[in-house]
Image 1 (cartoon, one colour):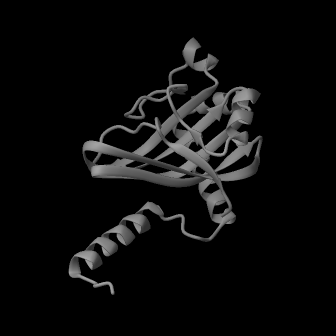
Image 2 (cartoon, one colour; image 1 turned 90 degrees about the vertical axis):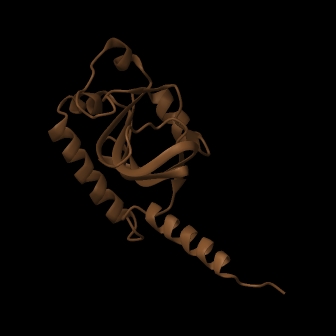
Amino acid sequence: MSSFSRRSFALGALATTTLAACGNGIGGAGAATIDARVDSTLNFMYTTYPGTRDLASRASGMLVMPLVTEIGLGIGGSYGRGALRVGQSTVDYYSSASGSAGLQIGAQQFSHVLFFMTNEALMDFRQSAGWAAGADVEYAINEKGETLRAETTTSLSPVIAVVFAQTGLRLGATLEGTKYTRIIP
């Protein structure tokens, strides 16, 4: 026989609240909602950082994550949903998730776009069961989201990340260790 204590209830409520917060507002309205948010995110990025238009025109594909929510209090994590665009068409939908442990406190939300600059990088991403961002991702906008770097090393990287529109009480945003998984919205 199992007993239901206040501690069990509190832990269950905390877990449910945390998971609900990770839903990051996209909800369950499906593909149309994700696509609308992707369009809005791309319009904001192109307006705010005009240099990203050139990256987009040279990219084989772009993974657009309109809103990623990241929280941490000793143990942390992040979650978001977005779409993979090839040309002007959405070809797949993905979730991004990461976990971390250590000295951390705070929460933030941000947007990011991964530009796949080669067909090989795009195919590696699409064919993987779960692709993890790591050291092979080159960041084109600094952590404060101020400037676009157009360096030779950036333009030669197979995957370029642009992280922008950060809000919250946690400094910096990194995609290292973030796992991307194909979803059906």
